[in-house]
Length: 320
Image (tube, rainbow, N blue to C red; front, side, top):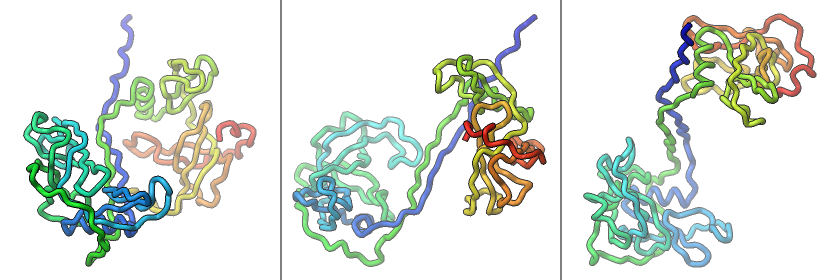
């Protein structure tokens, strides 16, 4: 008799992104508007230090600061690291150096890219200048990169600046994004494979006997591997919940709706799920629910009431 082959470990590309709109205060507004106009601004702290990029509160005294100054567009590299394999959306598509540059008139350094032919062309202490983007909109990317400058180029001093520009930038959209390949590992691969058969598979700790769903491959309490697989559910109990009143982008669910923690029968902790088939204001702790699968769905679309009496609080209080 031949032993069954273990399931293939799954892998898939995953994108995590958190774009959000940020309002700018007077200091950051002046800084980004200045970049659009080809001007680099810093701020002077209580002890006379010029910080670029500017901050809104003194790092030593925590007092609000608004004393803006204009600094030079040339500066000195204070440290650097070579990037031989640029990633998508980085400042340059060809290999470049990440550099910290102390602009003339500033006491702190700004991080950006340096366009150089190779690491042998980059040194600490080298002189560089700003290369402005062809089109500027009021963002840090208005500085396309830095480029080598001659030793004789200007060494400017910081000069007071009002920070006033026409059509000031007052808000930005911050694009935070991470692309990577995710592998769920042995335990979660088995869990996902079970979902394809409309089963929920957990793993039991051999020490404390808690059944983890989704399984993690090890018990976080006892620190031992979990290999004993257990099918739980399909029914479960609502342990706690929240009513969602704000519609999420790209989510085709009308608000308000209920998102709950559901302790499936036999599981040692609750998982998340949406509650349907019942008015949102009738969902309650202890409600007995069961999964609803859509044709071809890879996981339950939502959970609906089973019609059973509510579970007693003592049954699920340890799972809240």
